[in-house]
Amino acid sequence: MADELAMNDQAPSHFRYRAVERATGRVRVGEISGDTAYAVRASLRRAGWEVERIDQLGATRAVPPLLRPISTWLQGRRRQSRRPIRADLCEALAALLQAGLPLEQAVGSLAASPARGRAERRMLRALRDSLRHGESFHQAASEHPDWFDRLDVAMLAAGQAAGELPQILADLGGFHQRGAALGHKLLMALAYPGLLTVAALVVVAFISRSTLPQLLTMLADANIPAPLPTTVLVTVGQGLTLWWPLIVVVGVSGGLALRAWARRVPAQGRIGALVHGNLFARAQSRARVARLASVLGQLLHSGVPLAEALDVAADTAGSQALREVLTEAGEAVRRGEDLSAVVERSALLDAEFAQLLRVGEQAGELASMLGRVAERYERAATRSIERLGAVLEPAAIVVLATVIGAVVLAAVLPLVAMGDLV
Image 1 (cartoon, rainbow, N blue to C red):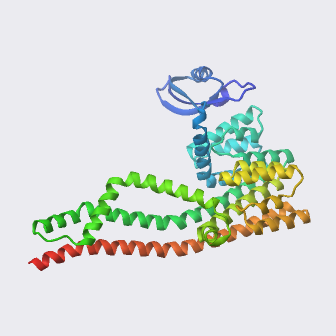
Image 2: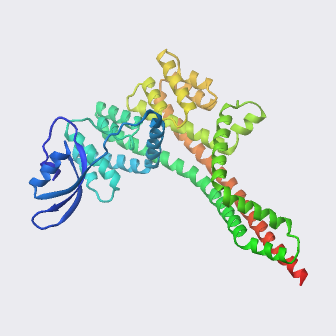
Image 3: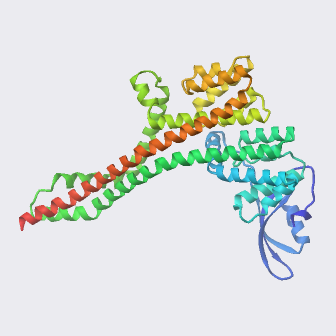
C-alpha cells in the first residue's frame, strides 16, 4: 500500500494508522510512509480504507539545551544495548549484498522479516524509504542516532565511496559482535556477586520486619534483655527498609565521586598501584584499549584518514577523559606529530599500547598493527574479567554465608533466652 503514495524529492515521514475497510468492515493497524498525514489519509481512502487514527512516527522534537546531554546519553545507552542486534543486522545486510541483491531491496527484505523486532523493522522501513528518495546509505543511517553512531556512519560512507559496502558491513558486524561479547562478560562477572549481595540485604530486611520484632516483643514481655546481635540486625534491617532510596542515592553518588577521584590519582606510588592495578581497573583499561584499537583499525582499513578517524573515535568514546585525549591526538596528528607520542603522554592508556603504535608507524602498517593490538587486548581483557569473576564469586558467597549466619544467630539467641526462662 505504501507504493501507492506519491514520491517526491524530499525524504518521507512515517505514520502509524488504524483504518477500517469500507467493503468488509475489517480493521487494520499498520505503518506507512508519506509526505504528510493528509496525503497518507487520502492514499488510504483511495485504496478503500476509512482512517480512524493516524500518528506520525519518529517526529523530530526540539530538545531543550538543558536536556541535550541526557538525550545524548540515552541514545548512547540504547545503541549500546542494541549492539548484538546491530551486529546481526550488519551481517545480514552484508550477506544479502554479497548474494547480489540491490541495497534497497536488501533493506526492504529485512524490514519485512517477522523475526526482527518492531523497532528494528520500523527503522529498516525508514531506511528503505530514504534510499528510494535518493539518499545515500550513510546519510539515511545518520538519521537514526538510536541505532547508528558516528563510527557506523563513517564506515558506511567509506564503504560506499570505495565500492566495498558488503565487506565493510561484515567488518562492522564483527566489530559490534566482539564489543557486545566483551561487555557481556564483564556484566556477568559483576552481576552474580551483585545479585547475591542484593539477596542478602533482602533477607535481612524481611526477617527484621517480620520474625525478629515478634521475638523481641516476647522477650520484653518476659523482662528478658534482648540479645545484642538481634537488636543490631533488627536496627540495620529496618533502616534498610525505611531509608533504602537515600542509601541508593548516597551509594551511587559515592561511587561516581570515587570514580572521578580515581581518574585523578597518578599511576605511580602505592595508592596509584592500588587504584589502577586492581583486577577491575585492569579489565576496564584493557577493554578500553581493545575498543579504541578496533575502532581506529576498522576506520583506517575503510580508508578514513587518521585524523578523521581519531575525531570519530573521540565522538564514540565512553568517557570524557578519553574523549579529551583523542581530541588532542587528532589535533596533534594534523600538526604532523605521531599518534604514539600523544598516547605515550596519556596516563589513561597503556604504555605498551604506545610502543606497539610506534612500531606500526615506523613500519608503515598502522592499520594492521591496530587490528593485532585489538585482538591482543581483547584476549587480555577477557583473561582479566575471568580472574575478576573468579575472585568476586567466592567473596560474594562468603558474604552471603556470613549474613545468613548472622540472621540465624539473631533468631536463635532469643529462643535460647526464652528456653532458659522455662
